[in-house]
Length: 216
Image 1 (cartoon, rainbow, N blue to C red):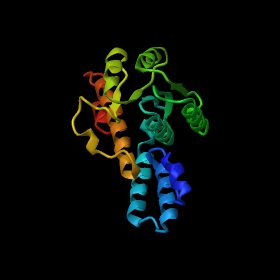
Image 2 (spheres, rainbow, N blue to C red; image 1 turned 90 degrees about the vertical axis):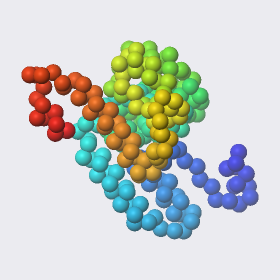
Image 3 (tube, rainbow, N blue to C red; image 1 turned 30 degrees about the horizontal axis):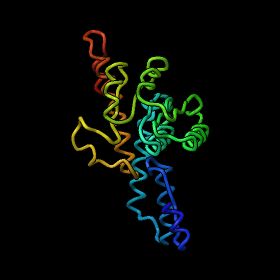
Image 4 (cartoon, rainbow, N blue to C red; image 1 turned 30 degrees about the vertical axis):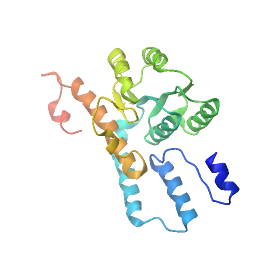
């Protein structure tokens, strides 16, 4: 409604999902530059380069990973888009308050990448439904809020806490998700969870190659 009012009084408007990841942040900054008539500062260009470089460096660990993403519609869309950029597969995308319009938008996003071909969108479903999905169609990682810890306990799917509400961890609200720096933070958080799981699975003396284990 606010956008409609602003247009009526002659204000230039633009709306976005979370500017998370490379392409989403590109689109946001280019629109800001267009509206303001100001160039994007070189320092922000350097931030972009660091994110792209980090994604390329970690590609071998991210490619093909399957995710369950849940939360508010805007968050799910943004994270799914970023996961696609990393070569991951957003297998289950669930928003309890997702609308049919959001569902259509999500399906268009997933259809834009070969990594989204097997993904499913669940509008109006809750975490009890996601629990069943994690048993019948397991994934590697789950991204959402603190409520997912009960699914993690039941299904063994590692949880990455990235969105409100986070009750059981301190100070997560202080770290950015948006922009190139936010993308780098999300990237390293995902990778840390992947490596934590690998550490747990490669700790058997006489079986695990400990030299390799330290060179990830």
